[in-house]
Length: 329
Ligand code: HSE
Image 1: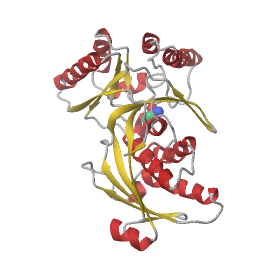
Image 2: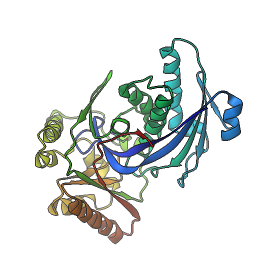
Image 3: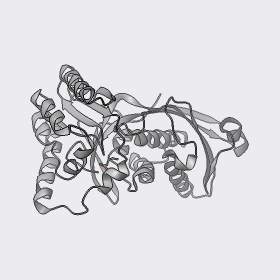
Image 4: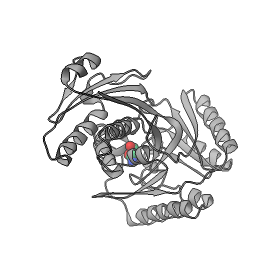
């Protein structure tokens, strides 16, 4: 039996302008899983019970030892489709039919719906761990493809802007999906991100369905100008250019209605020196980028006050933008 413990970080998808094509990893907040590869079903069932998920190339047991409530049925867990796809691909890679007996114990979990890539951290940690016990049979791009199956389960569409930074770390730009083409951008040392998760429920599926299917040319021009500006800002280590580029005319105008007082909160954060403010992923969390820990802490107090005045419970995370993605602990 082989066992490995892996951490995968929380992430902020879109980063304002890069809907479905950009995301960043956070430092210090994430999921921890233990993955075990057993020799047979009996050994797996002995440790993981009999509610196992069976597919052609694997049998999977999932245990939740974290403090967060998760669906008990493995078919509803984002880890399952990611691992099933990876095991099918492994059989092809080793050119012989094989069946893997895998147990995953979730030890630490980002709260689902927190806006910092909870589902992505789960599937990213699982595929990263399995790849390690399979002696790195797959590339990072391939792991991202597998982990995207989890995103498809919860949102209806596979997208990589959370899973890619959760696996690779840093700020990741997804140039294309067919095939997946990932670019890891340089991350300045003094780059901070504060995220508030107001206790409001907005599903990713709902937040995607609200968006218009077509984009007007005038909006497309604004958006791709900003994506270019953001990427150039990182390459030139120009955080002011990057901040000016955290603008979104594609999703923010439609999604901000889910977040009470969003415009006022954003205005106050920007007036207090934050370089960029927008909706984290599909929301309802809001992030603020800044150039120092002091500013990141100031963003925390502004966010706390905003939602406290509205009697809305919340958590606030203050993190450096993480350079590292998933890793063995
Ligand atoms: N790019 C995705 C969205 C991120 O905005 O819907 C959330 O999973």
